[in-house]
Amino acid sequence: MHRVRKGLAEVFKISLRDGLLYRFKTAVAEYFRPAYARILEEILKSPVLHIDETEVNLRGRKGYVWVLTSMERVYFFYRDSREGTFLKEMLRGFTGVLVSDFFTAYDSLDCPQQKCLIHLLRDLNDDMLKNPFDEEFKKLAHRFSTLLRKVVETIDRYGLKKRHLHKYRAEVEKFFKEACSDEGVSEVARGYRKRFEKYRGKLFTFLDYDGIPWNNNNAEHAIKCFAKYREFADGRFTEASLTDNLVILSVYQSCEYQGIDFLDILRGKAEDDEGSFGSGRRKRPIMDGVQTLPEQLTVDSAPFVGDDLAATPE
Figure 1: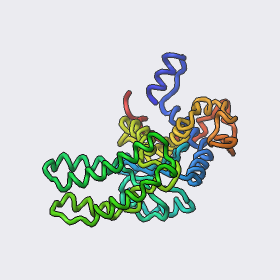
Figure 2: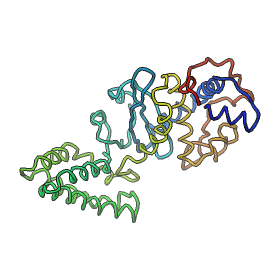
Figure 3: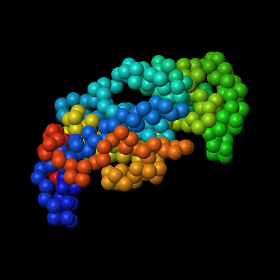
Figure 4: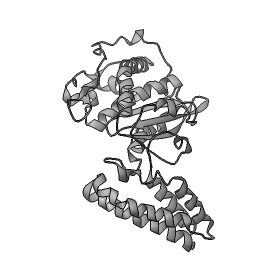
């Protein structure tokens, strides 16, 4: 925001006092809240929901930023802790497939789930490097990676189509039967056998649906956008300023996912199909239920909220 203020002064000769841009941001976040609420509604209606979370430091305390994404929308929100019991109520009514990492807070949610297999592969590779002479574990990891490679090659050729992927169901069940029943002495291999058994019904869910990814890249891509901002503002957030940022970032990222020009949204020039959130049939305008942004937003009337970098030199 300091750079924006400096740029306005140098390029356009517009001089703004400290804090004015932060008031404007608060007013813009309030303006976008109806669209923000509708983003969540639409995500919960989608056939697939990706979820992830990341740590954030506020002034004097720690919290977590969570993200929910469909293939077209992104919804960020803040919670004081990583404890996930609130998710049951928040995701009530969601009937699609939840794609997530192996964080245990997701395990008890009552919906079909797909665990991120890229996370599992990373763990296997890390333990392979730590245990290069463990032949028992090496054999187990090789069997899993060989199976997954065959499935991914089919995805590369035909896409995420059930009619092409469901044929691997018998091979997957054979892998689980053999991997989980093997006896051995390797502690690492034994740990992964328990993990395979625990998540047996959540590792290859995507074989039984159309359009369900086998990884959580969608949510991780979204969270990286917040992580870039966190590099500069971590420890300077207030909860109010962070929440404002997440409202605007949700709309911005949803625009990015759909190829919509966010600047056009701000200028009120994206009210037709080209500037809408949706897919398939006629798209619903992103700003349904939102009044037109005033030509001159009176930021002095907006409550001032001390922001992330307001007290930080450029």
